[in-house]
Image 1 (cartoon, helix red, strand yellow):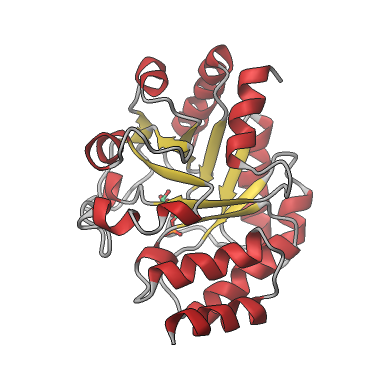
Image 2: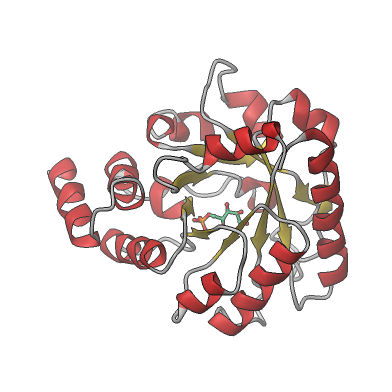
Length: 260
Ligand code: R5P
């Protein structure tokens, strides 16, 4: 791996801890003004100091993030669908490498839809993105999107993660599930978990802890942070698990102290 690629990855996954707390605010690329992100600039400002990396689309990056920002940017570069369609898998790469370089992206993010109607198209998109990222020394994060008809279990997620890594993804983002060690064990690339739909803070902390205990390098979490009534205490509690090695019980205590 060349210097630029290693340097960009080290900005996302802390080389000292081997861990990463990525904040995801890219949901609008197919959901529009997602609850909690109607004004993304206001939502993200107090959270950014606690994130190792920020995942978002180029439109939101350009319009609300100060160019003086030092947090590495994980740029969402796929899209082409909306929540108005039943089938969300019909995505393609929507950002040129030239623009990603111009935006100083530290990583490129695309979704793959294994088992969907557009499986081949999204896997070919990932492969091309890895080739292009390689030319510029920019790593690629593959998001294992799960269609309604797919089970979020270790068999399916393990398959999708392994395929993403085999095709060249440098980091894979997936969902936590039972038997998660099997998913991590079968994937040669580091794994981060998405938080998924908003759930109780206590439960989201438990899942974050189980994921890193099972071998994930961290989280790429969105709604369970920015849709919380207490987003800053929540990101700090998640951070205490991911970067400080605290238990979920300790993180919950921290959350309660910060919200008291
Ligand atoms: C989904 O397509 C987006 O990539 C989100 O960034 C991802 O789902 C992570 O956010 P959340 O923790 O809200 O699931």
